Image (cartoon, rainbow over all chains, first blue to last red; front, top):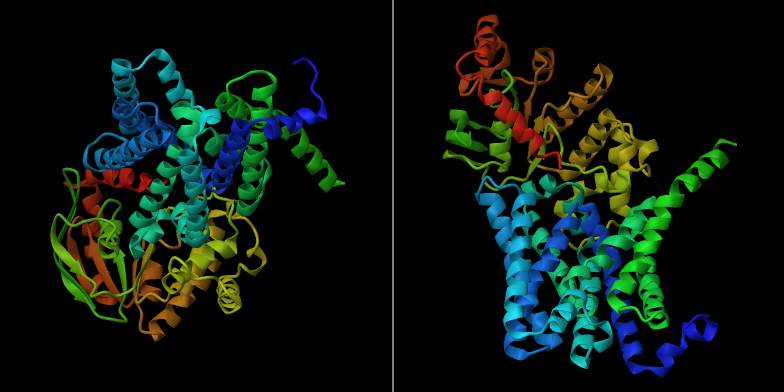
Length: 287
Length: 246
């Protein structure tokens, strides 16, 4: 498709049910990814989230062995594996001299190796590609409902516990003295794993953190307040999801990478142009 | 009342503090002095419950505790305002779900005025100097209404005028019956604001009325410790502080 017309911006969603479902799934993920990803960034846990997303793999692989390519079962297996790894990493850091970055990196490598090993005993290479990079356009009803529920629960929880999450993000020791620091951190990790598993079905283990990391990082380059960062991150995630799906249809690209690349375009452009805009703003203020 | 019984705290193999024994009555203002690595911070952390004793125990009998560490764990990378940071002081009241209503906002403003940060209320915390951040943390303490206030080197980043202004708050807290325990370096400040003093150098050397405790002999003894048998504890104690940075 060489030339795009305005109708190409919406007709794929009118014509094809799988495009509509893919869009709804990606938008639902984006709504939760804005605020959750912003907190993730502020808590300096972006790399930890990347590790956790891979931790989902062995659980999903075991589910695949028993239930075949069922997104729901693989999501459930991934959820269990992700929570186990989160708890295991915390345990290793607390009770051994191993630093957090090393304990997470070790678990990450083990998760990938065991996941790929388990999958290779049963599946073909095609299955592996699905698991690693997702299959947004093959989402079934159960998976779509699961994504919507996770997104809704995440937004509700964030809305009610926002203050607690901010206090523990800004000053963890403050909360430690008063109690509740561990509870808040565990709550955050559970929300994170839930969203990674939901996104895993759509974007795959490798890319499921994409919407959690890129839009908030881009927003942080422009927004001056916390609420500004959250709002901009959410808008960027929504726009990236839509633009990525359109691009994937127009240029016959896989949908998951296409969405993450769309978010990446905003990130790279922002890095490139921010200096120009901030110096222009400083000039205006100086006048 | 704080009851300390045979308290011992270790970091790995190093014993940072041992043999602390005593009670601190409600409403006491106690200064903790001693050389670097002598266990001042460790004692405050043990009372706050941030470090676990390897032996003995500290009983605070369920009192509400506020603890201002030497290097606060405040992450200034998060773009919140000074007023929002100070509002954390209402945590015990609001809990997880409580909101900051107009009444509470007025109390936040009042606390900011008390520490001289009114003009900074809507400034972002990454724009504060070290001294201004410390003022904000004092404002947060004001809202906390803790029964036991633990302060670790609270005046380190401050000029004399600012420390005098903040130390004036101690009188209010004393009048309200709060217990104040502060680790301090400046013995002038100790004499001025704290009737009781505890000297620690790995273990307690003296504990009593400030005038009786801060004798030239004893101070000499305590600070000789830094170069004597216990000096290896110091770098480790620093490691531990560094840990709060991230």
